[in-house]
Length: 174
Image (cartoon, rainbow, N blue to C red; front, side):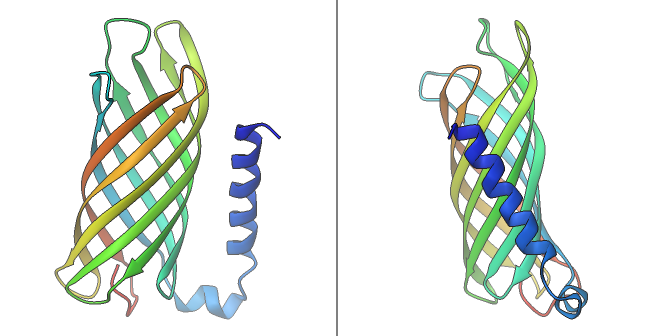
């Protein structure tokens, strides 16, 4: 099975699992989310940036959902791109109030513009984010993700991230 097909299958299974929750469980918990500003640093010298929004369903310490955003990686040659990632997203939040740690894993696809036209491919992100909660529902985040892209050239980036996380109407910290 091709890597992009595997990611699509896993993403579909996550969506099916989330929509299979009993109605009462879905009504009790409102979504959580995180918005992060990233600086993407490629070991070869390219530097770009982006915004990524995670929309997550809290399930105890676990958060499951999706992420989407916009990313730009400028370059003088054909390596530059502006694209939109669409990813299945999961996080494990360790800790409850004050300072906590979120381990995030995202996978899916990206599509956008490159010098030669339109392109797309797969994407996988894994990261660690330190969270400082200002109250039960809002937290500032500081973290780093390792980003692996394939499709229009395989690339790896480090992505330091500064962001904001929240939980709407939930007793859990975001």
